[in-house]
Length: 125
Image (tube, rainbow, N blue to C red; front, side):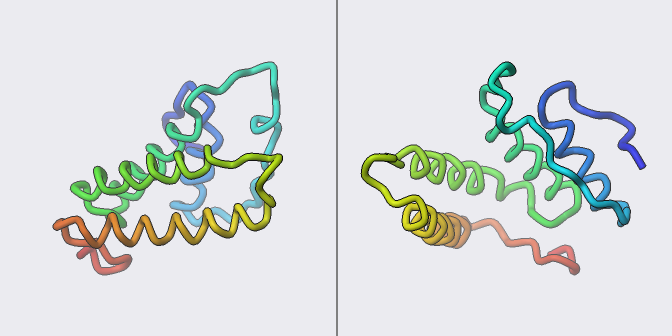
């Protein structure tokens, strides 16, 4: 039910969820306070979790290892897009929709401009 090793940082909960997903455990995860607890700063948590997800995808052969630079570049660009939000100017729903659309376009651009082959789920190619 538990991974053999857990990271010592704030990505431990994500690692447990990925382990449960891999093992097909029939559990219902409950998200906890880590997103809003102001007493425990979490510098770079988003990038740590992204890295964990990418490495997991590589280990599961869902993503080829040579695609990591393209994914990292996509993440950096989307992170910059997220930082452009201005609460006094932007409508949150419109901003999130534009962010999603821009994120998908950027991902398509990054992955299709890379010369590395894509891994397709299920067939390992």
